[in-house]
Length: 168
Image 1 (cartoon, rainbow, N blue to C red):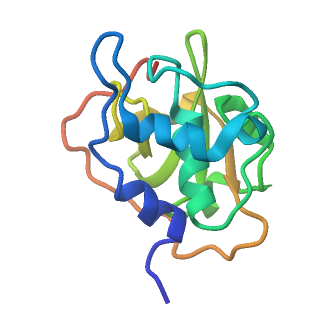
Image 2: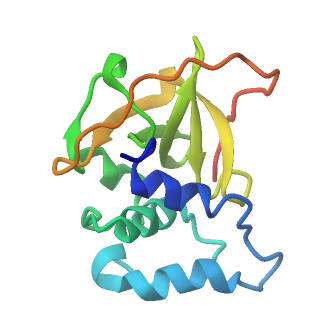
């Protein structure tokens, strides 16, 4: 049995993917949007300067055979996807939805410390990265209804990295 769910393995494989600078677009990110299409994303996605955390999560869960929520490009659309899970029942791969100035953010749980979740997400500093995001900003914790949880909570030591304040 895999130690991590398939969608989290798909996400890890994308670590380091970055937006293209200026008016250019990263063909990888634009390829995700083209494959998923307007039916999944809920909009025509035509530039990697448009927030793409929801696009990233949709791509990863789609690769694992799961269906993203309607209007998957919107981070907060993920707050009703799958089934809710309690903070004490988290496992790697859980979808976490956060409040942020001007909107929301979505990414995957990989661990936690007392004040923050370690989140693997897209559009974190314009790239697919790992970031610490305050637990107080988390508005939803979700798991796909059709898949069993693999593992449990992961306690991580603080590595001195500051909390992310705005993932746009």
